[in-house]
Image (tube, rainbow, N blue to C red; front, side, top):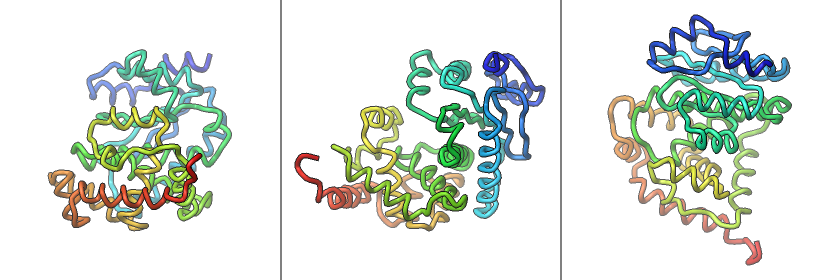
Length: 287
């Protein structure tokens, strides 16, 4: 019954914002928690404990955005669904085809809409029971909105996912959940343990369908992307932000990369293939 209310109850403020976007969109859940830059709205069936974790994660992200001197032009709306079925329905309401919504609902814990300041979160058992999962998913999706609002450029897939991944690593560290060094070591272990990995050059594609296809095939593309960015910047997240500031000023993705990191991405891909080969060289032939 709560899911039905999620899909049928309007708030005037969100109705107005969606009208301005010129689209018919899913109706928001009740009991919204509002901030000047973020509005979180919950399916009524989302547990109280999950709401507490999400609110705390949002506050921490707000502190990080302040620390990094990031001011979003458009406020973000987060819709938190209660389960996968509702998540799939909401995806369809936002324009996903039936098959695309089904695939997305199966393989993602949340999505950030590319051309709208809207985030959809799937109310998985992990999200509802695990504080760490909230701090993994929400900061990641919020940083996608930072990318959307600061860097309206077509960028390589690895950077599209690496920056939000690094942001959520630092968010979980600030929340006292896991030190960044441990998170990165675990990430490296997953790449080491994978049966096979794509080349770094494959992650340089700007066609996101390529990245998604590799992910659905089980390749550790998110982990590889995170390690690539960490190899490039270390813990200097300011360099990541400067990249998006350059994009926001109109510089092309490749020119911004060269300006900041002193080599083209094609050379960086070769360096990363060497790094991954060294990382995985101690695997046994049967692994």
